[in-house]
Length: 247
Image (cartoon, rainbow, N blue to C red):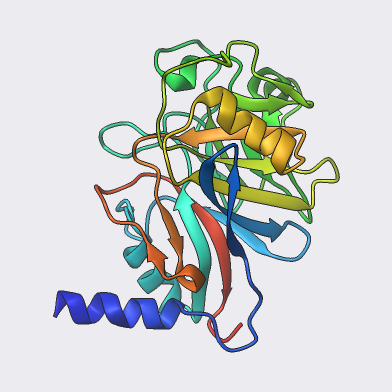
């Protein structure tokens, strides 16, 4: 029964003939990546955490089933920021204009505390990746937002604490935004990569001036057009693009 349900969900999520393509595979400096691109002025980019009953959604099949019940489907999705053991967000989380978790400005351990960190913010017709202190100084009206860290690229500059010869390698995922705020690119490395290499991928390969790290070892992607639905432990925040079921 469980296998049949998951198969049905994949079929429901599959793009129809002639549907727009979002995700592709590419390589940079010998590391394979999968990238999924959306237009903030054209596509419905959202964050998800809990269902109507307040329970954490936790995974892509559950999210797809929830959307299917509303006549929608996922174009793609990935884990959308760091979370505590109970899967609640570590930092700011906004859904449909409602703040579920507040902005965190104090330093803390782990990658989130590798300052500067930042916020991915979806506004009306555009998106932005904003360093946390800049965000706090002039908070924009985000429809959806997630705080994570560290920042990868800040105004075209790499995070100052990244080391080009670092031997700390991991699967990583993140999001970058073009200067005009319309082009939004989500990426996941398909092999371990350093922070420095991952940041250069966003800046030098994708040409994006601002990018934010979302997470590492838990990083997973749902990309039905590529036949990909990564499995693993339950997740916290999820981010992706929702489409009409027939779109």
